[in-house]
Length: 308
Image 1 (spheres, rainbow, N blue to C red):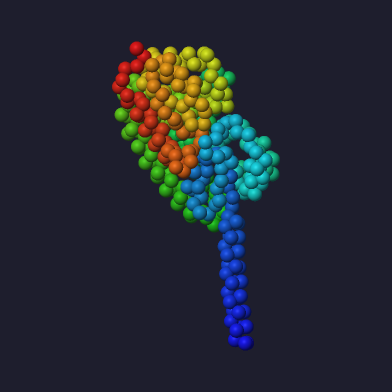
Image 2 (cartoon, helix red, strand yellow):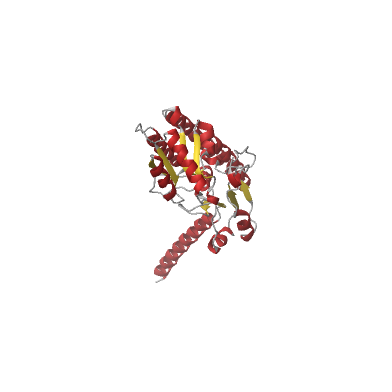
């Protein structure tokens, strides 16, 4: 009888010990610093630098438009537990300051700080910075440096891991840079015109020898005016551009009209302000860039005569 009782107590002790161990593990996971990014592209960058030391989430979900996003009460509630919020800046997230204040003034870093922006040249946005700096791999490297510094401050014990992760990711960006240059050089010079709905490719165009044409400067003002439409149709027709494109977060209806009236074809959907879902063509920033450039090359290498 005593032996049975002793055995039962031993079993109970093991079960209790197991529960305690599990609880301790759960607490460790819960206690990882939480990083909240404004949109999915930044979350991908943050995860590559953070590795498994930080918990990273995006406020805006895949497929959602970033410029005019309206945070929900649930977003604010989730943000209240964050240790750091990461934003792009350059006027991209006009809602972010109010959001962070509502969430309890969480510490925030702006990845574009210290960067020389390229300016929008027309309409009501003339002279304002174009916010899409992450669309150039060269600029993205500066984002990675900012993330490394911020994460070391947040979690000093992880400094070596953050440094190693940042270096590895920048090497991936350097390989991507060379890939894009080699790929884009295959497009005849006279055809190197990237026609999109939003003027989101300014940094990519500047760094890789492309011209840019679009229906609106930024998605914050994505109403197509007759003047903008006519101007883009004329550009596509006169330059004999084979294909035009649009971004995944906006309607492509107006751009399809440009294609129909100019004699070009609609070449497909770019990803810029949002990654795709995991099973889509652009679940990471590196894949996003490769998807966009492959689409562009397929469209602009079309030797069919247009605009006749």
